[in-house]
Length: 474
Ligand code: FAD
Image (tube, rainbow, N blue to C red; front, side, top):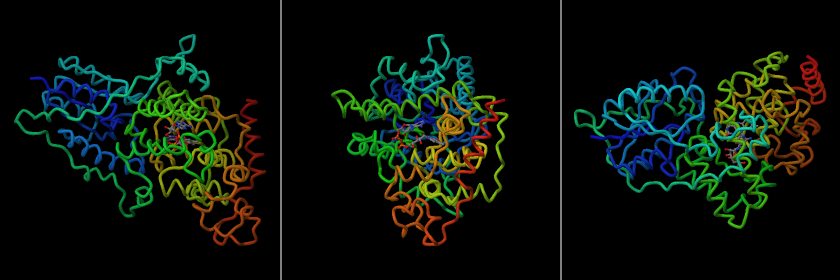
């Protein structure tokens, strides 16, 4: 008797899920499993905020599967062993999953494919989470692109991403084990993904609705609102000018194909410039994954090896904490770091400014910042996080030039002129006028309790330029 095993990973959805759609069309008894794997070699355990997200996303997925006549089986351990075990228990004759692109994850998947071939189990993988898989976008000489603009041009010149598949209304009944029982799963609560003592997740819960339904609501809100003005709105941290789809895309609660075609349907008469800009942001996500695919150690190794010689300065614990906790004395950096801590998310422009401050003004190794973001972002992504940190540091592909040092004061004056964002996240500044809110040290004590700058901007900028220049000179 045939039986299907679908292994869901970073694709926690039923809509546009090719592995699920294939299982539905076959109709054989079905097991849908999620494996919490923190132990396979090289697999990076999730940070705290992402664990919070995962918990809620799995609750939502389990409910959606049950509504469709199926169930979600939870297991933990080294994924290859766990999947083999579940396949054996349920007598699976067919393994289905959607492809992953990280090095350790690919190693697990190819190990399983090999094992399945020896067991006469068919194993089929699908394209679901990237619109342009890394090996399909190549330069004229067959290598990977190292610069975004030609990469994205090649993607846009390729056939348009396929249409998304609708979620099946009904899924086949769950497969039983050899004793005629449903395979036993673990309790989600036993995984202890939610924080306790202290429970710092209230701000996250107020901001987000993890799960597929929440993802589709975000998309609808974006299309009805900021999408039409995305080109300018996306740079203003004090307004909701972006989609906030990043954690949903990170966990695969919505597919990039769905987002792409929803935009196309919403703006059917050609793409206004704003839609083109938004699409290219989706393109950055694809580019980051291509970089990770080619450089599996992107989170730990400089993409440009000459940066191994860079003279990073180790910050003191107090300095690093001042950055992490939003107490650097620079309102834009502090507002961003506090937004991150409270909501698990930070506006992109502020991410660039806060990261530049750590790496350039404090001259701290980008890996310190990457690790903090990994732990605190709900959208912490194995590709986008290190790729963007390396972009800011200058050690990455198509990186920001070394002399580009974001000035947090100029940035907030330009993009948050009325101080709306600054006041929201740094309440000590609430009483300052629109001028002083950007430079509270000039405000004669009116910003009670707000720290003085931990480094001076002109000196730290000069020190950074000098250090980068030394690297350049060899
Ligand atoms: P929108 O502006 O609505 O963009 C739509 C989607 O495009 C995003 O959801 C995201 O999937 C993708 N996207 C947009 N900008 C980028 C980018 N620069 N790189 C890659 N993908 C992009 N993004 C993450 O998803 N995870 C991370 O861990 C992450 N770490 C970052 C670290 C630093 C230092 C910096 C500067 C940026 C980082 N980003 C990361 C990129 C970017 O800040 C976020 O994707 C964006 O702010 C998410 O908000 P949004 O969904 O409203 O984006």
